[in-house]
Amino acid sequence: MQNGDYPLKKVCIICAKGTIEDVYAALIMANGAVMEGLEAKLFFTFFGLDAITKSQMDKLRTSTVGNPALRMPGGLPFPTILGLLPGVEAGVSTMMKSQMDKLDIPPVKEFLEMIVAGGGEIFACKLAADMFKLKKEDLTEEVIDIITVGRFYEMAGGQGTQIIFV
Amino acid sequence: MAEKLLAGVAVKVNAEGYFEDPMQWTKEMAIEMAADYNISLTDKHFSVLEFLRNKQLAGEQLTIRRVGNSGITDIKEFYQLFPGGPLKISSKLAGIPKPSSCV
Image (cartoon, rainbow over all chains, first blue to last red; front, side):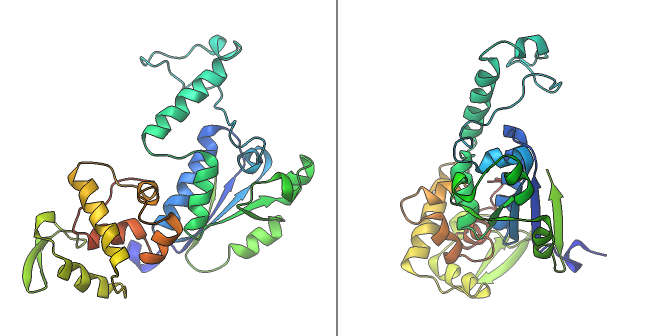
């Protein structure tokens, strides 16, 4: 069987976490899909909602505590105890964002705009939005709607569809 | 390496149909290739193709975002100009290598 026999047509991507790396993994997967001419639906839930919440989306951070893959600029391991100090997490996050900017990876808001411009669709999870007391107006305008998990599965129908959980 | 006859010229292309030598490219070839995608090229299309060729020649990484910031078109229109994979299709029509960027 060849890859081309059953080509991928649609991806439904769930982003459940709010760190820079998790949110960007989901955004890059979704944007990459529309770039390839695939249908893409992006569904944010739990802490992933930060990425589409107006007041939080520009302030995403990466964790400097309990992250064994984090290294100092020279490549030495990043001591977890350093990550506890005030300002360190913000500094590391700023550095990460500037590295991404060099690769032409846009800020979250612009990335969402790019995905929507390419025909991608953005949704928020109803249960998580209720839990965090978020309403549609708290979310960025790229979000089409706040939907239930059932509605999400309805959208995931069709041959050549994959669900990706970040 | 394969050869493809475009606008009466044998053009060196790779397995996916991208030009091996961007210097072989002419506008007539772009028009002929665009027909495979059911696109009839307008001045706007050609402005995008020329932008991509210039950037590629200058050794710059090509991304959707860069095309969107080019002043020629925005991202939404870029998708409409080259439906079904704008950066890949426009790069092929522009006679330049397949873009290697993930954004």
